[in-house]
Amino acid sequence: MPETYTAKAPLAARVLIADDQKHVLEALEFLLKDCGFSTHTVTDPAHALTALEADRFDAVLMDLNYTRDTTSGTEGLELVSRIRSIDETMPVLVMTAWGSVDQAVEAMRRGASDFVQKPWDNRELLEKLGNQLSSAAAERRTRWERSHELEEAREIQDKLLPKRLPELPGYEVAGTTRPIRVVGGDYYNVVRISREEIAFCIADVAGKGMPAALLISSLQAALTPLVEQRLGPRELCRRLNRMLCDLTPVGKFISFFYGVLNSRNHRLTYCNAGHNPPLLVRADGGWTELNAAGAVLGQFPDWQYEQSELTLSAGDQLVVFTDGLVESTNLDDEPFGEQNVIRIARENPNAGAQDLMSSLMRAASEHCDGRFQDDASLMVLKAVSDRH
Image (cartoon, rainbow, N blue to C red; front, top):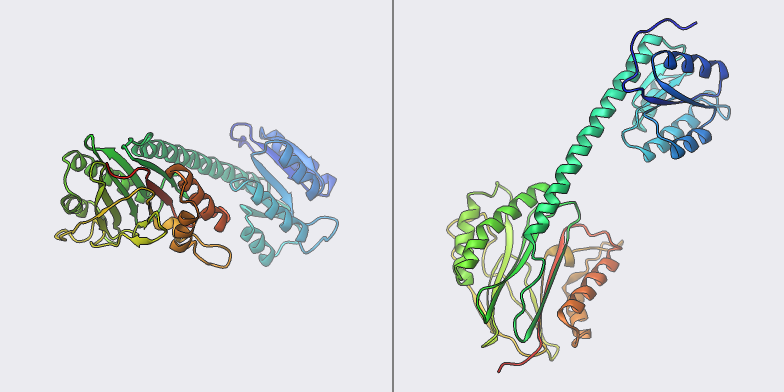
């Protein structure tokens, strides 16, 4: 008859008990039920896995040794690994009469939460089980809160991106972004600043996840009033950089490209602040890079930026991207690269901006088997009519 223990199960926790000895199962079941736990017993690892896949449990109390091998714990260790692959937070308390320090260490390495030696002490077993259930509940609560916060952050970041791009006579514009986490460090936008002009930009923060997303929010907040002032690209980058230098942590920076396109004279005026050079693929198949002429934002407060100009003709395609697109690698560690961007644009001279953007993103995704290593953003601007 097990000794009396007054501790009660937290919220009537449900425990799966796995052991190949009937008297052990009965003793553990009696002990746990007497303390308010709900239990389910199985006699081998296969039935344990079946039970875990079919039902919900709050913890597993399991033997390490079964009939196949009564001393090494191999079956039990394999079961620990399988349970951990099913649920990262499930408390797994392992037991064995043949335990050793090495076996206990291996069980813990594979994901066991704690270790109890047979014959067990009721008080010790119940305390360890209760502690593990409390820790797991706290971990799940923390994960839920973190997931909820990230989801809210994703919704906020989505609102920073344009839902519908403005139209400009004689041109098509398309844009997309693909973060590798819930939130990302890329940003793009297209804004009409007059009847004949649009301003567009793309940015990439060094880093990923929430810190990068917070910097993107700062960038967007600082950028919006500057765009509304219809500043030239050079002056806009100068002022934006000064503001971001006060906000950007040491070791962080933002690469940025900003352009203004006039549909009347088909002139593109731009400034590249340390960003991947956009690629202009001409209607005749020739191409050129819009090279960086300035430092990244957020590092050098007194940097003086320069701007450049070029004229677009019918059929020209401007591809603007972050490094997550061209640096995505395949299994052989080969990057997608700018040459593939140029090749696909040349092979699709009659494609609209949306279709070319989709082709490029699809090709890059196929190249890296859908496993982008960084946030990937892409804009395509297509000149569809010649100057008037």
